[in-house]
Image (cartoon, rainbow, N blue to C red; front, top):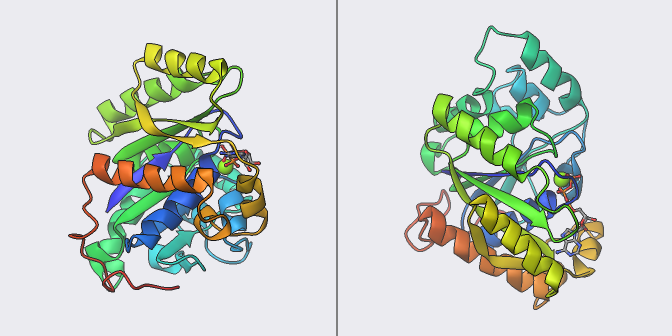
Amino acid sequence: MEKIAIINLKGGVGKSVTTINLAAEFGARGLQVLVVDLDKQANTTKFFNALDYDSPSTADLLTCTVSIGDMIQMTPVKNVDMIPANMRLLMANKQVLLDTSEPQQTRLRDALDNIMLELPFGEDEYNICLMDCPPDLDMGSINALCAADWVIIPVDCDEWATDGLQEVLDQMEKLRMYYNPRLKLAGVLLTKYNRTNAEKQVAKDVSDSGAPLLKSVIRYTVKVKEARSAHKPLREYAPGGTATQDYSDLADELLEIVGLNVSNVDTKNGGDGND
Ligand SMILES: Nc1ncnc2c1ncn2[C@@H]1O[C@H](COP(=O)(O)OP(=O)(O)OP(=O)(O)O)[C@@H](O)[C@H]1O
Ligand SMILES: [Mg+2]
């Protein structure tokens, strides 16, 4: 299972929209996808209509109170399952810091490793895990970076677009050294893209930081907001739309980067999962 964290300290840059639409694109290609929502705002959870304070969630994952098999829920999107979030994550983040009985940084990684032991298809249960992070470097984000093989940093093409980028890169460097030597940056993703001088400047600022830019960019379109309100991935809400095409291109680019060949992957059901 390739694990990808989607992170930026800046809010509103398209982390959740990217998580949701990449999940749908990978699922449509027959890959089994697990989405993990690590943001107490739970926007991705709400998108999948999975907000519920009684069901196990990522708060339980961080406090090690429920086994991972009991946290996973199916979603209406083909081949996509998820572990939801809710506001209990706020307290859970504090509890992790007070509880030293278990390693604090690797709880998500350990839980994801347990999928192999707990779920019927073991290693083949999921091909890709997408972790949607909050606009913060809290214990949820740290756990995502310790579990991840790859990181995507979405950056919107607004003013101060690259604020916080260096902090994420520095944090990655530290965690790579102490906890997760496999951690790699897939690239910075330009979101809400319009072809103007502002975009050129943001691309230059990213290059100056030394971080690689993904080839795909996600164009600005009102369809993104509309699709989210309709609780539908773009490929369903606006087939043929600009951002729909961009997320499809991004999915292909990422599969190449992480080295997943769709025709060769073993899936638990041969690619015909929950529709
Ligand atoms: N390509 C796009 N075109 C137009 N609007 C977009 C695009 N991508 C994201 N948005 C809008 O930007 C807003 C923020 O997106 P999103 O919630 O994905 O950001 P986020 O980084 O997850 O935010 P947070 O840090 O609060 O979790 C949403 O209203 C969304 O509809
Ligand atoms: Mg979000």
